[in-house]
Image (cartoon, rainbow, N blue to C red; front, side, top):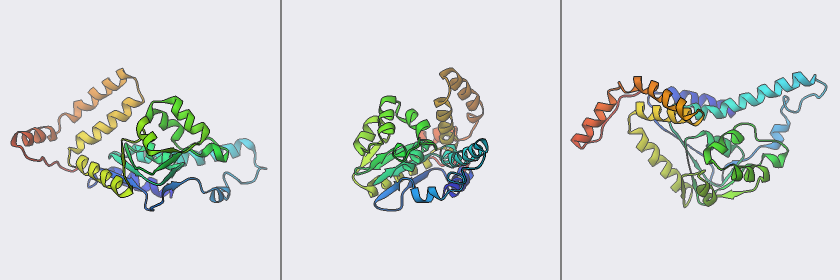
Length: 244
């Protein structure tokens, strides 16, 4: 599943027919239910022979973790904006995946948790790196990550983890689809550039972000999308934009 996720998002990233993406869970009870402990224990990398040289075993485990991290990062790296609609149980991987997305919404009954400490490990595929940047509240992040406690939709909204809470899964998914459709109607040059610049600026200083934005827009401002949008506004009609 991990490797397939990366293949899908890498393909969507460069598909000119795709302008925005909705990520949701297929079941009614859960978005994700956390780690399959029995399946994990069958991993030859993590639970193989202990007679192997410690340094070599550590190298293999590190490669294994990095590969999983890359699969989750494919969501964040995707050039198209990704909105995640969460519902039901949203444990473990749900936090990893959704923090890699650009926008998050959820159903009112959603139960979130960073459960890794309860199974004897530190979350290692994205949550501990991305969640502090998503909510900007280190006290709250350490609270939920160290205690592994469940937190609900309203608390998630209060701290800024999700931007909308809806009555049920259907309403949350419809809201996500409406948002994605609205974004898809806009200039893909503007949308993809905005996502890229926001992500860059998040990880760099203000000065670096401003300089990079100026360099980026020295090319992007030459698009015909700008004049097309302005002309459509003056004519009071909806603009259309070429694929990117």
